[in-house]
Length: 266
Image (cartoon, rainbow, N blue to C red; front, side, top):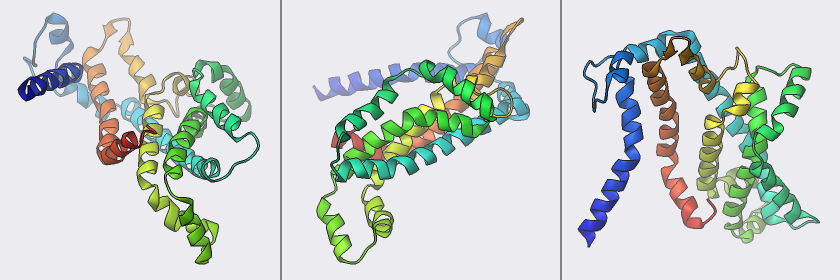
């Protein structure tokens, strides 16, 4: 029975990895070979597709733009969500449950709903085509998610720790930074992971609110479509490089994510 389960799990994992392998396989092929027929591995191995990305400023700048506003959004989301989640976790006030639900409804709404207001607002105040514009727009969705996740972790910390710290003479900022934040370190790691991933894969707002200076990689990838067809090899290489940041983030917070699932909050 154990062998059957192992084989079934192995088959399932291999099935999930097929698209990733095929993307990697295509990235080392020329367009002629890709369109010529089905091959399980490159017959004429080439690094030309990756060379295009690393030598063309429009390509690697797209990656830098994406990393810039995604990291900025993650930082802003955590900075805002930490005190908000603490308030929801430790205090009871009029309308707290309704306010908490209202925050989550922003995450439920599709980005297209807020596209026109953001576009008109940023165009009016001169924030269009800037990294901060995309970072702030993504906060509308990531801050509620961050508050929801962090509140679950904070509620798991006994209130007696807060009271003991106050008795020992800790001010609230000192207690929050030196004692409380280390206690919810796994929760912060999980929250940073989800904020990073949601901001990294979001396309509609990032593409509409930028044009040249802050254009993300997801928008640059549409350049492979031209009158002569689609540059499949370069597009596949760009896709492989787009997956790497997410894989690195998952690797660093893998234990925290597992703990978040165990707590039932993620």
